[in-house]
Length: 263
Ligand SMILES: O=C(O)CCC(=O)C(=O)O
Image (cartoon, rainbow, N blue to C red; front, side, top):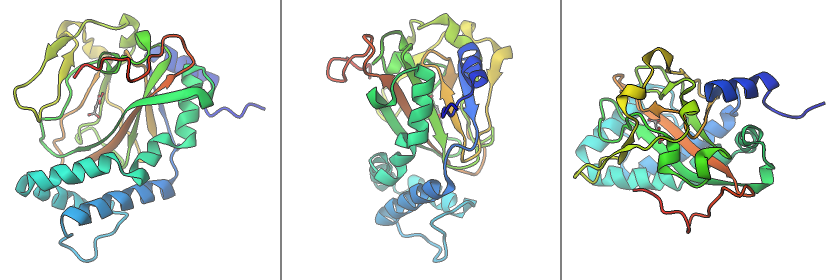
């Protein structure tokens, strides 16, 4: 009997559509550990205003505090944000064995020969425009594996994510274009994200999908799939992890030192 996590249908759907949502992958206990890590990092830089706030918060009380903290103390918020980027309990969700197994099944490589790049923890606060990414392909930002064919992007939400929280928008089947020459936009504001944009005329609006992920689900995407951040019009923070896996045995793989990352 196969011990694979993905079915043949999953793989076929991924190959055809350029993405796949896989439900019930993450363990709620691991999510609790990650949220506890997030909460403890927050407590280092700002005291929670409510004594009874739960480390396993699932309500908007904590989010409200994060939003206020970011507004009032941007420098401390930046330190909190950066600490989370290296928090072992948070990042563990992205390097979890099930996530790696899924990546290896999609790439069709040995799980023990994979490398990762672009591991990032996002906290997207309501109405923020500074860090949202317009239509792009991850292959243009992280060209570690030539053509992106032996690599994959995985997004992991830490909470149930509705469309109005700015969930990722993607264009089904757009990976068929291969890697497009992007329009480069670097803002003078150093806090704004670099944009390597896909020309708007290539976006087929009828194929736009906004998956609403549950906290145990993961979104798997082809490195060439067109996607962008949604706009967070809710009153909640959208917490998510993004990681890219690569087959390091594949000839198309370059080590980080040799790759000139576009920034
Ligand atoms: O979660 C998001 O807002 C999208 C981020 C994204 O597309 C990326 O980092 O490549």
